[in-house]
Length: 208
Image (cartoon, rainbow, N blue to C red; front, side):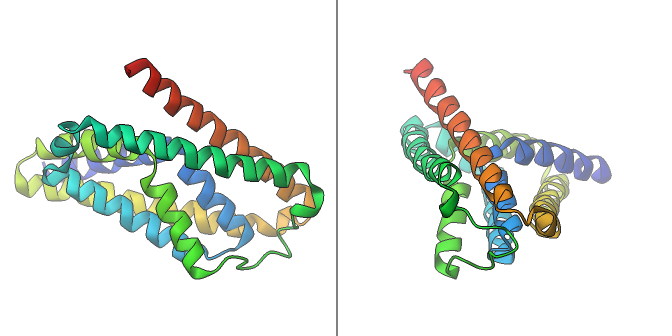
């Protein structure tokens, strides 16, 4: 019974985390650049774990009761993704703006890395719809003792996922020594950000 709850939490948590593409792409990019990777993966994991726990404690019901909160997150998140995507596209179009990953090490300050990670973690309404409302709602259906196992599975998967893609990308950095590698990644990041932003805007307009 407890093992079943643990496994269900791990599988569902993993599925939802993987689906949040913009955040994952940011973590991978930081890993490839070897730029404050530990800070980025720790904050991503802790924020995700906190939202999962809060959802199981009833925050999902509170958010669902105030759709304005989701609207604000959608508008703010879309704007943030569009700006970040445009900056990435600019770097991809201008060779001098991109550096070889072999030359990039901790180019951002600790504060900037932390703030950017928080932005990608919190300015995406899908984080609240999926992680807090959906995952939290499912967790709340379990008896309290089983719920703890469900949450443990989901939270453990979150930490494993972010550490894997962050430091996994770091291990791949030597294979992307050519400056063209940075430009290709910037282009992929821009495309991902624009796709996610377009999806958010489309969902918002369809519900208006």
